[in-house]
Length: 254
Ligand SMILES: [Zn+2]
Ligand SMILES: [Zn+2]
Image 1: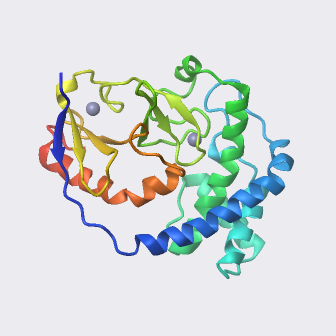
Image 2: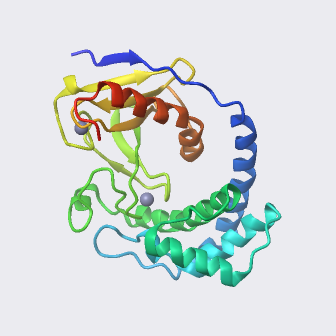
Image 3: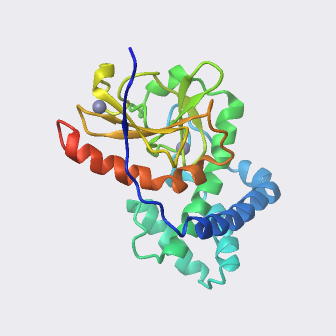
């Protein structure tokens, strides 16, 4: 059966290019830190027996702060170690960073993500297997088995179109069912609508008419993506548009 397709209207943000340059320069700092300091910090990481293998709240604070300071100094932001520790403790308690200005917040999230990537690499190298992911504390297909954060980013992989989720925090990928809603579990293909926009080829927003939730699906057979985090950020207008579309069309408003 042909999938239901529909067109999605979005407005492109003019500052995307600027944001990309800023993101790239920060990403280079993260990459360099991982090369220099990754093996040192990996020695202090312990993966759990079951998912989540290393949730964000259990990542070593010293590692996050070390990377965060490098990112801050590249942005010419001065902040004391005591303040950094306090902000991190606050985040660990309730995942809240609303008091930070946008640049600080970006640096903070990239630092958390940079350290979380080390855990994901370890999990990947250990070959933690897909069928184990449904055990233990992780029950949703959308929840990362390594860092326990939720992802809305799916990738359809070559050559045969298998679907994986990509975690935008730690970069781990895990297989999920190919069709149906990853939120409510509905297997009824007629209830899944694929929204597209011509400015974003190779990307579909899959909205479930039953639960009103959506996922972004990147078709890696059509679109070659080097950095999924940037790809997700760059295409955030699609998320907003899908949310609006869903509010108008879904049977149940979330
Ligand atoms: Zn993750
Ligand atoms: Zn659903």
